[in-house]
Length: 370
Image (cartoon, rainbow, N blue to C red; front, top):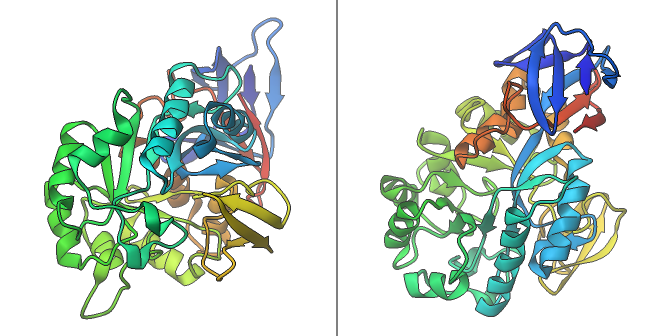
């Protein structure tokens, strides 16, 4: 497959370039001529972007990773059609046996990928080491203090955990951050009442991300910066942002982007099963979720994930937050990939994953090439 005549995002800028994909891998970038019998996609008038990388996503299109392998496969196949090249299925609070079974399903898809789906890069555990007062849509009865024993009870025999979100102020959390770093797991702070000082201390131990910045965490105050203030100020920390215009005001999106730049901010969907589906009643962790005008809430009004797609997040950052496209594109591609050490994703270059996103000049999704 040869994608011709588009404006491709290469090395941080848009250039007129053609891209050849063979066997789901980019094999050439430049001004190229079609080979005999090669399928050609004319991208005239379109932007050509690397496939997106979603490092925080619970569910999509009626499928939820907590339900096991079949649902993760449905997510994989569906997400590819929205431009996602790779993702990290994200668990939520559950009892240890349920979490273990969910991780087993994620690992099986990671090890035996779908032929026509987005790659599974590992699992993101967004529980159970969270602060009850900031539990958000997580199940309070399943939360517990961070210990290696509790972690190993959920993960024994499974080596697919790539990320974990925890509350760094909890007893044992700093030791847990050190333990996870030693085992190659990226740690993130959220669902947390931590002070900025506690977040910086966790970063000293290896914590490197803030999950869904400003949401389910101590607030930013000019004398008490809290979790978001620490995340914005600490250059060691990548902040995850839900750019749906619901979780964060456009001004906050812009402030965060100006603070962190293209390499310090990762766009995430944090989506639940209603993503890609109409408004209505859905489920999240056994709780009823009501989706109206794209906003997903529990019966008590608490936001319960999002229905966001990453191409919408990119468009929103450009249109609502008024950020330059060259700053925004890495936030959905190379930055999330690099933040978890995922080689071969997030860039248009030879050897990288052969998934390309097409968007029109008004930043509307125009298709995917894979």
